[in-house]
Length: 442
Image 1: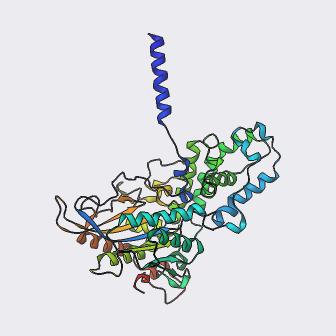
Image 2: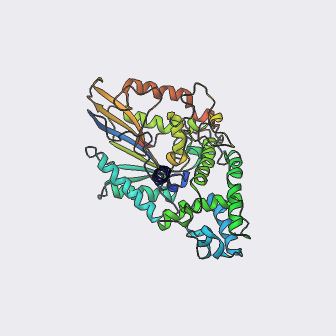
Image 3: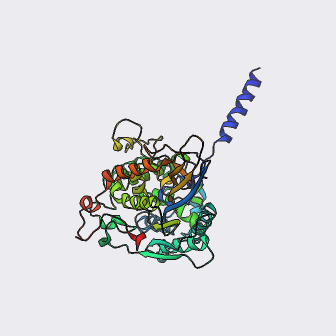
């Protein structure tokens, strides 16, 4: 009897272990290769009785070799240290691959789009084409002027249509454009790219300490720091989008808990940099939200599909302007900072940069004509993030998680009251700085 029970427990435990799976590539924050998390698990196709009649998209550029800051702050110091280390790699366990590993990144390739990035941009163009077969292909696609955004837009257009009908419109990344650009944070002195570094550093020092100790036991003399650990984890993402895979992703090297800690450190940074902990975030994101609403609410528009390419800073601010991924949305208290403690992870948080901000992350706002059971016939609007429909706060009286025209207009108006007034709130140095995004009208 006891032997039978022991066997049963052994089988049960094996089943539990076998059922657990973990993919580090889905927890890499802003350097996660593009994926489409079902968060929430709602069907991305139009609700029953609805046809999509117009759409706007904001897209972050696709995968690059490495961000300048990531490379100079974390990756290059680690690879330099590795080149000068004296280690018996035969005894280094999961670190032993470092004996022959060579970095896939050079100074000349920094910020360049990878082949995988080009392919993913092309595929997104194909996907958008297949998603809206009844809509006209756009005459224009807009992009900020960095090479990585321009090439992402170029590959997207090639996937969207094999003809040369769609033109690429370059939008300057200068400060003087104010809100009238796809990089409005550059014209906002109230924003700083360093916001969030101090807060995320607190968690970095905590989560990397046991990893450093573990690696010191495996490879004495390597003398890794907290920044080296971050660089190694970043290489999992960057090497994957360059070479297709990376030994740094091996769960024998970094455990699932290590990856969740890495993700949380980045979530803290983005939360304070471009998220709800920064009062200027929604101000930066609202011009695109307002311009998209104007295009969708208009009786007539020049295009059926509007697509714009930008950098990693803008999409999170747009999500703040829309009220999405708000940790405190249903808490009854407006204390966003308390939802992201700096020394212990909030595993139930809504704000996850891997979901919000992988390479090629895209936000879509769709206009739909609906004649659906239980709803009045008319126009409805909804938002998707990486193909996942999102519920707008207080704007969900339509099929699926859409909202009616009247409620959508009220929603945009209320967001404007909270986040409008770019020039007043950013206090730019240029007197001709604008409050609105007008690039689609030119």
